[in-house]
Image (cartoon, rainbow, N blue to C red; front, side):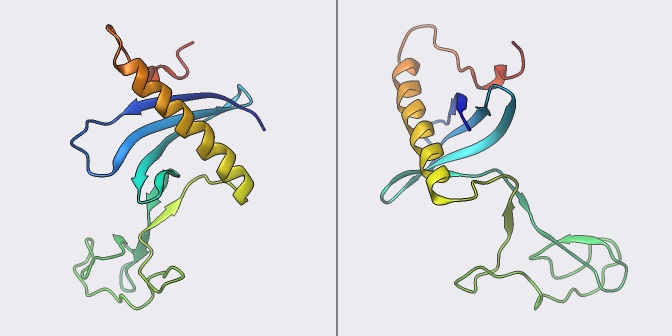
Length: 139
């Protein structure tokens, strides 16, 4: 697998920990959008694109956010005991849409994205700077 392109969209300095959004192109043929670069205690890390998990009402079968107490369809009380949990028993509210299968792939991906982020910071200080992030697929 070759990461053939990385595009960065810097986030305003007012954001707490979110540094940038990025999209990667793999083998010049497949794009993964909306990865997030987040500032962590030991440096920036990449968060994969994710979706909010939902649960279903036992009465009507309506789809609801996991933290909802009442069904948005029928108004019935929702059971919260069946919420998925992470390794530390916290409720899991999001699931990755795309992610590396192993640590070596994650490290290679993260290293490339952080390098491109640092280069984008330098480019952003130049006159006439424009992000290439939204131009994927326009070529």
